[in-house]
Image 1 (cartoon, one colour):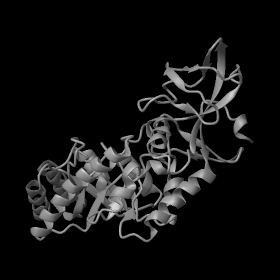
Image 2: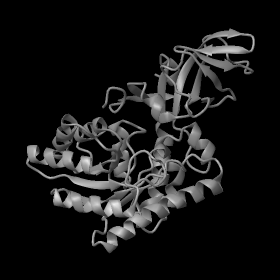
Image 3: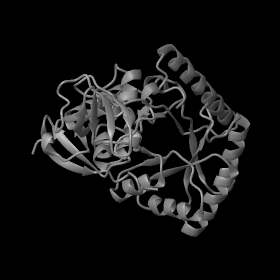
Image 4: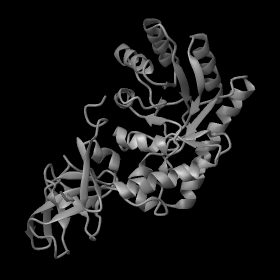
Length: 353
């Protein structure tokens, strides 16, 4: 079976490129004090996580509890849940997963501490936690070094195993201007360092200082206080990251679509917003210079100057944002060249809460 035999719309993974991207990022961190803990929110399949761990990653980062549970069922860890969870049901699920794999949770307030403390009492075991610091994203996280020190002490008094801190310079990772991206990332990491210094001065030196994304992996990965980097998109290199960091890997992920209509300079493909996302800009053709200019529910609208775009033709589209496009699908068609060698389930997608 070749990829041209696949019914569309469908996600295609070029395994040769995936392996090149994994190997290149692993090589960067191999001899550094900082290590790689890649994010699962991009690939959402244990097949990729296994390969990243085999290449030297010290663990996996997850963004949702459901992703943690996918990894726990596969016996893959250690895992950092780099997000807060709330409610007894999620806290109890956390402790259940923590009985299967090494797992670290994230806190940012006394509310989280109380929830984990109560969950620990129900589970009969403690929890490992790190503190999220707001380094500029303004989502979650402590805002001052004093607040971070107080929260670390509060966690310890509650019987939790405080392990360190994390901060994500996500507002920097996709800045197209390199100088602005570097300076913004450094500002964020300087904030994080201030919290680390305060913790050290209070006798609470963090074991873990986690930061970084694909766009800033070599900034966070060269920052003295940082111990690990959470880069994830590097494994597939979607369109947005390719625009920002063309020096990194090649696109490994494409959406295969079929042209269903051609009217003059307009072509329509069978992939709309239920198969493809465009919040990071229009998705682009992989081998032909076309862009998906607009998405309807089931249709993608292409301004077609390309003569090959006739009804029945199949084209590969590079998503501008891989994470959200992947979340719409249930499987990858894995290829080497044009040959389909496997299908992999996307266990961490959609209903994974």
